[in-house]
Image (cartoon, rainbow, N blue to C red):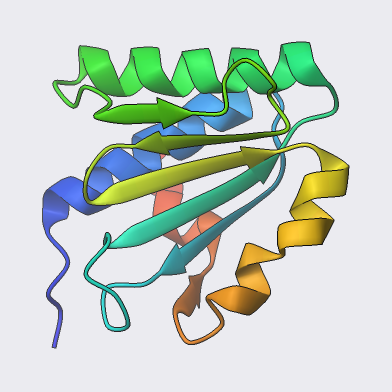
Length: 126
């Protein structure tokens, strides 16, 4: 039973594009729609340093905002060791290496379904 809206998929694809534009590391997508009411998707990505992590955040916020999906809340921008961007149905997490290992969201949300990023973005985007 597919309960994820096409908007959630479009938002996720656009966020992945924005992350790739700024060379995000190890982008992962977890479908949490069956295990949580928080959102449909978690996107998890890494950055090499504070400046890159903030640039990743800025690019995701700008791309989704231009598409009509303004960010509802941003947490952690100043320290930039873990930035959370809440777009409602899609939540983007951008980590530095140390905090990504420490918090290990992929393990915490293992009941969700890992989505292949390339499959999600598909050849229709190229």
